[in-house]
Image 1 (cartoon, rainbow, N blue to C red):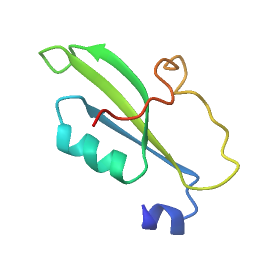
Image 2 (tube, helix red, strand yellow):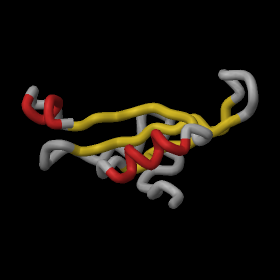
Image 3 (cartoon, rainbow, N blue to C red):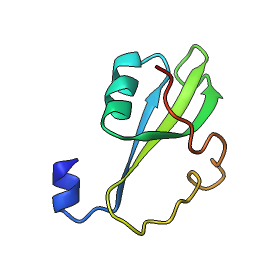
Image 4 (spheres, rainbow, N blue to C red):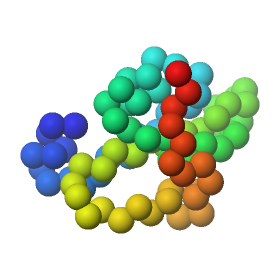
Amino acid sequence: IDHARAAGCAELVLWTIDVLVAARKIYAEAGFVLEHAELTDALGDPCMDESWRLVLAEGVPDRGGHGDRSQGHGHKAPG
């Protein structure tokens, strides 16, 4: 995150799946917000495909997800 800020990045978006509980906890603790979750079976068994977003610079527009992936924007991670 520090490197991205120093490089001038406006935001970071990370991808994970719901069964990676430790990753989700790290993202939430670092300030990322779950912006999209969608059921998928692309990895075999059904799971939730998730995008987590962290705004690094003021004035970055809230895009509400990526393209047509606008569902679930603004939800916080489960405990």
